[in-house]
Image (cartoon, rainbow, N blue to C red):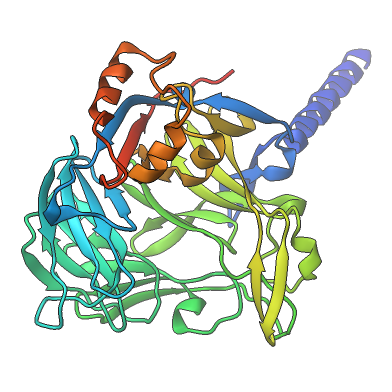
Length: 426
């Protein structure tokens, strides 16, 4: 009897310890529709913000000054990197936008598309989405103008075809198969357009809808109060599998057979942005939004944007203009070791990028490469009074030598690096 009692007490202690460990864990196992999923519980992430060096997360650092020639002068750039090329959109306030292709050394190759009102031309005055596909050397380009639809070009600039989007103001376009595409809608805020009531829509080149996945959560009765409507949408690939996150759903999905299959649950907790509910505008101070920046086999990197110094005005009943001074942090999650912390990146490689610029302007790509672009005049302003070649490697000094002839009229400079395959941060 005594032995049975000892076993019972021991089992109870183990159970209590296990429950306690689970309640304090950031990564927890939950059951949804008879499937076991991982829940990321943000309230259990320590408040402390750790400094993380660029060299802790990244490798293969490159400095790429884009070639400056009369035929490829760039203004207000929009930049996208593929595995092999750099695509740069140049825009003005009135003329049609232009798109240039450079190699990975920054040398100009060719222009893609042409402005005008003729067949296969565009009038969009700035560049929206660019989606390069190295596998077949094609690029999908959205020229943002009235009634414009995405164009598909060969990398050499040859126009291939137009894809008709089935809804106005719908999200970015992604290739599902050779002649099937999908785009995202909005899953937060009061619906104003058809896209505001869908998660995903699949369609063919002519804009015929093949499949629609509806949005399920809404903010309730229409009100003059404020409800957050923006938030991030992230579409990316992991091991060849499409994944999706949209603010307002609190779930990361895998996209399988044109269906959404839950993958992870994001429990934003008490300070997460309260989407799809009406709130007192004064409660926005300190609330945060999240965006999935990258996922690897063992790692999640999530951007956390905390609202600071919120200033809001209602310009129409139920319509608000909200301004703030956001604070950018990273949430780094080691899925294997259950290690999670808030982070701020600092530049220990280039010894050049200010912390606020590094944490707010870094562009993350599906290729696992990351980059930041600096217009020449801003670069010259940053290095004024700084010796950028102090405390850097011999290889980095060699790369900086490419910048000796930079002037304020030069094309932008790109700093790019790749996420390490295996990351261990103590």
